[in-house]
Length: 400
Image (cartoon, rainbow, N blue to C red; front, side, top):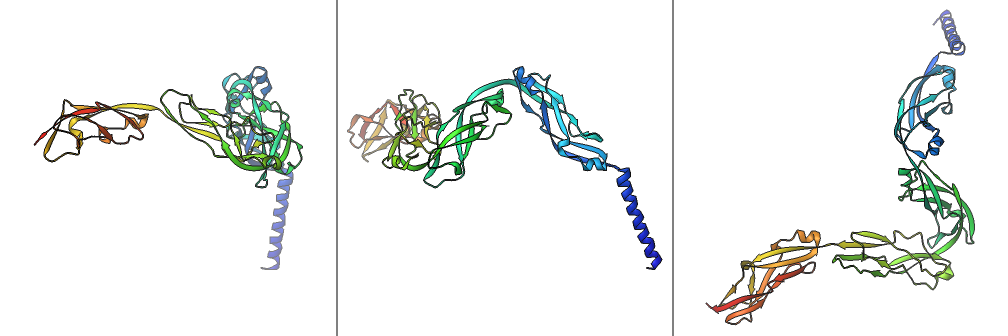
């Protein structure tokens, strides 16, 4: 490349850079940008509250927009500069379709929005009291755990839309394990509304955002568990129970040392009509002893078998004769069939058929002439109660 050509290239590059600086700095051309996941904020919810109403759901919580403006304005645009709102001041109970208003800084234009309206469901505003439960976050030694000595607020009030409030089972407070000491100490923990499965429930408020908890580090010990079961039912159903044999207790080591077993409150299953888990309760534990949080679900499992009845007829020809002598003939007299009344588990009884049972008479001691011989039944008589009609049959014995 000659010297003149190199000079021309350099001049061209310099001119291009100068033009770019001029266009960007002086003319500031337009630019386009897509912004996603802008939260939609409901306005005037306090107006709904004053009318005894609350929001239970919105069909969308976010929207996306496309904006345009000068390159400089777009470059300086921050997520906090944009707001999306819906005005609920005039919303009524039920489903409401409301317009989404989006505000952007001066010099920015909204080209389009992913959605323009959303449906907001409004319900009655209700409140209820729920218990406060304290849990511990972190790890303890195998034979230790955090014990809650006292809680400033044993219950709090949860308020919100009726269907959402129904989901709240309790308010959970969490204490960090590192803050639990050998001596009783006080901690403040935030309260969160949660469902029975332990999941946080959104869009409700608690009357107390936090509570004060007194905690202490306790020892744990596994001991025998005694559970008395009572059943005074008379409905004929069979009730079987499965009961935990062991339980983990917590307390000071000197208190636990002499304890080898504890008793749960008596459990009455008389009125249980279907398979059920009954939570064990402990109202008579020794002083200074608590049930450890390390225990998994402490329940009595009750399995209920409803009784069913079925009538099965077995023909005379199906009765098996045993103990016969080869030189004698045996004839069952005055009988067409035997009626079996079978009682047992309702579902199992319904599936029974005549081939599930065998009727037998033993004629080994029968004499010539007429004999009254008792019927016996082979089959699943362990799980079923079987009644026979008749119980005896007349067998005529004669020479061949």
